[in-house]
Image 1 (spheres, rainbow, N blue to C red):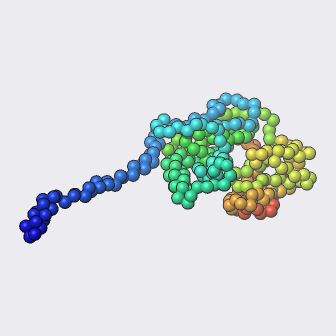
Image 2 (tube, rainbow, N blue to C red; image 1 turned 60 degrees about the vertical axis):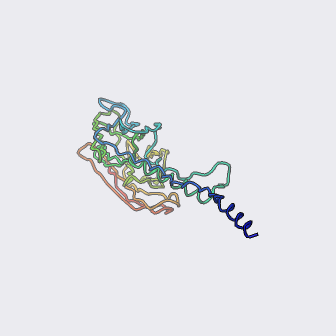
Length: 293
């Protein structure tokens, strides 16, 4: 009996224990690094301005087109003419198609981070141009690779336009002559700091007529949608300038208005007003000026 037990124990001892398979170690996969933002070489930029102003023109209104071009742009945009106040934050107002957004919180966060990263990568395109037109200072916003359209109104006689992109030092200067009937009075709206100010200019003429956007008064005054009021033969008396309230969801912003009477003559007179406009405010009186016969 004892011999049989010893024999069985010896047989069991000769069998090797099963070796458990071990799963191979999982190596952490590094996420690809985000593509670095493009750093432009400003010395290579050039500015295209059309039409090619120079010589004599019979039309005072000029539809100006400006485009900053980077010849090494890694992803040139599809160019579409846009006005300075058409530029909004990239990705704002996006909604999923088909009604209700069913994305999870993680998906929404991922989409937001992707938009923010794209805005950061494209931030170098946003530029502010300093502009001088016949002594009046303006600021226009533009984006590299896009055409910005602006309507300017020249004065009768000699005109000078200067456009500067401060960071690159690009400067374009144009001068031309306009031969038309003289416009004696001009009132120009200037958006200070390149901000869009909601609301509209109103000009109250001495006889009580109100010049509003796109309408000509009985005496012949005209306030264009661009915010410029002109009158070839303004009646004598006191003119009152007002700013109407606009969009209530906007931000406070400053508006500047300039008036020029008998420009380019020895009787030239200029006025300037600047006010902080609050969103949703009622008509705000900017100031008054007198026109003599």
